[in-house]
Length: 273
Image (cartoon, rainbow, N blue to C red; front, side, top):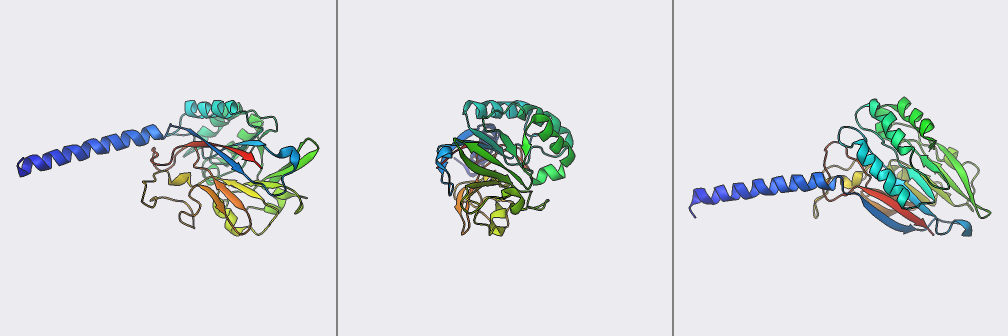
């Protein structure tokens, strides 16, 4: 093979690899996985042991994520038969017009102990009023610096939520209310960086999203985009801090780029122990 033919072959191979890689990244963006985890929640009473929590976050309905994808996520979450469903914020992307149709689909989420959610930074940027109205219309309880007591078999557990770290004013005291150090308390925070500001040891577990698992995460390389002050510390999965445990979902939608690579969209099904 002469020099010209060699470089032509290399260029063709690289072009084919680029097309294949792009095609896979687009495919992966719709390839939802079920992330099953068993996590300990401090002081969890007997009546709540084995509780199944479905966690959906960063849906980002908009130009990259259509309603059919959201509907499939809702149907999948319901098929998992969770006891409780929690939503981690960022329901839309780029425009407030996407909020109402997104919540019309999310209204289909069903769980015996209810459906609850918090706000994310994109909800502030792209239609806060429409997002709040969407919660009410869908029958989903908004937990912005608020909480509820769940009761089961004579026991109780606190489920709380805090405002977005970037755009709001998180207040864990309002989320936990009259909970004591002897209660089991689970808190939803869109942004996992919130854990770095936390000193309240009543919080036994935080569920968060926001980082998308990097969204484009090539094995062996640091993801080029992680929206966190702490680099890849809160990229995905379980992180133990001095005060609590944080579990970070890779989320479902996309922002910035309409692709995912090495970071499949996921619904988290968490069993509490």
